[in-house]
Amino acid sequence: MKRKLIILFDAYPFETGEYSFVRTELEKMVEQFEVHMISVSPSTRQKMPTDGRITVHHCIRRFGVKEKLCAVIKFFFSSYGLDEIKQICKSRENKAGRFYDSVVYFGMADQLRTFVKKNRILCGDELIYSYWFNPNCLAFLMEKRKYPDMKVVSRIHGYDLYNERNPHGRQPFRAYMDRMVDHLFFVADAGLQYYTARWGRQEDIGSRYSVAPIGTVNADSLPEREQPDEGKPFHIVSCSAVIPLKRVNLIVEGLAQIADMPIRWTHFGAGSHYEGTKAQAAELLAGRDNIACEMPGFVPIEEIMQFYASQDVDCFITASSTEGCPVSVQEAMSYGIPVIATAVGEIPNMIDGNGILLPENPSPEEIAGAITELSHVTEGEAAKMRERSRTLWEKKYNALVNAEKFVECLKR
Image (cartoon, rainbow, N blue to C red; front, side):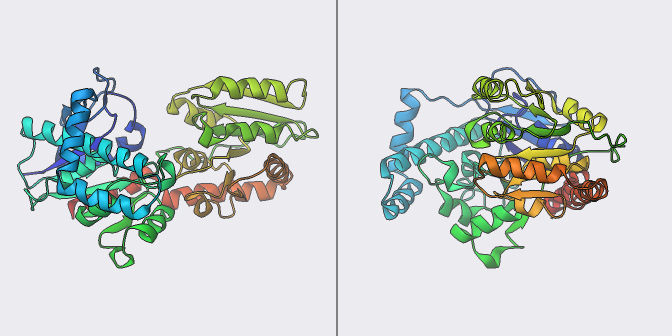
């Protein structure tokens, strides 16, 4: 009889959310486990199909006056809340904001606990896999006192890891969650180092903490390149949400510094700053005969991968201010594309003979310099970079290989 595995998601399958990252793992999991899935998406309509062998549960959390008042009362009269208050008081900064964050975090976890009890989802010997180290995970960690045989493991990425990603500079309930979780899977070495420096213990690396990259799927071989043409534009691609922390505007400002070489720039992705960045590109690059700019907005990942397979892309670039282990870079590497990227998160470990590492906070001139430098390498050097990108991807970021390893870890 297969063991029951409960997977916790923020969005999938009611939104696309995590799907592109977990689809390969899910295919392996249904072969080994009786899979149940809990989504806390606020959406009322399931937009993504699921395997017929998966049981889907949907917890829609409420945030009205009643729910907020209930969260405050329960927080201040629980041992979890009292411990959290002590931790916040020690920090002596942003106390009001951090109290608010912790109450909201607790309230979200408590609503999920209530949903699980009402629907009798737990027996007590399940394996819980939380895709994020967030309130979903906390809800089940608080149930471990009642169900000591239950195992709770979690992935941990970026927004759920870095203090800097929280407006008040602190991840709630970290001490308690670290103490209670059975295993944490980091998507990158940089995340593991960050975590152990603040909450974890070095001696738990390998036993309770391990690195398990997700990776991307690519069954294609390296695309064939067209014959070199001196007049052909240097083709740069970027792919990200157009939001402040991704700093797509910096790429535009860097391109505006280049006047002596033909460039084609394609950016895939939309977001809160899409229109503003598009207008900035039109203004700064207006009248520049040497630069062609394309910003098609949101494009499905399947189409982006087909673009990489069919187009000669000379360089992938990201100017992001913060990252975990960026999937967009992995996807480009899988097609043997050299990379220019900022030294944040796992990126320094992703660039090794296959591109140029920028400072964490590059200037437009530094971005322009990196593009110019990469465009002037010989065809032989460029070919070596492309091969190196693909080799690094095969070694660390092949989702099929990584999914097999991850599911074996879950079985153990």
